[in-house]
Amino acid sequence: MAGHSKWAGIKHKKAIVDARRGKLFTKLGRAITVAAKEGGGEIDGNPSLALAVQKAKDASMPKDNIERAIVRGTGAGADAEAYEAVVYEGYGPGGVAMLIEALTENRNRTGADVRHTLTKHGGSLGEPGSVAYLFSQCGLIVVDAEAHSEEQLMVAIDAGAEEIELDEDVYEVITPAAALSAVRAALDQAGIGYQSAELVQRPAVRVEIDEADASTLLKLIDALEDNDDVGDIHANFEIDAEVLDRIAG
Image (cartoon, rainbow, N blue to C red; front, top):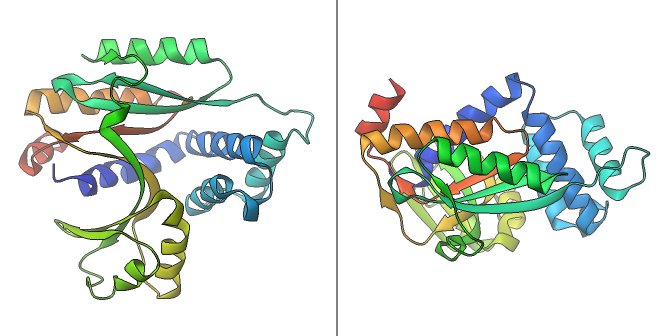
């Protein structure tokens, strides 16, 4: 697996599946609610809320759903919910480090569920700080390399992106977390389409895993994503493209 492009592709496909299961909007709504709760309901003055709302719009979440999620977060509605953001740290098969982001109204229940899922699929839950140091938050924008040239993407550098990397058939535009919105806006203005634009936890080192561990790890990720409380999952694994094709096939 060559870095984030394959992983981004897997997540993109799974996002479609989640939407069909009726889970994606629930997770996006919770993210909006927590962002509004922590930073207020004004999008212009709350960068976290702006990103959460944009992600919901990208998934075609109805405007009414977005507005209701903001109301829940600000406590303006009768059904205000006390969700909180929690990050679990652990290990998957092959010693892969994992950061698991969740939004929950019951920390004990979600923690127990995550621990059980990790253990069932050959992983383990770690202590706080056990793997977080291996990751740093940044913005990641994935652009089709066949549709756009690196020269065209220089507008991203001008807008604050740190680097542009070619990874197989996509460019990965890496930005500081705070610059993601500005870089995305610059690409929009230049008419440059992209496959995804999101905040990620980028690993400092990656672990290449064999086919057996890769198969188990992907099943683990599937199981975690089936949990309504679990949002983004970050891991530092690499899988050889041929191995990934065999697993997918």
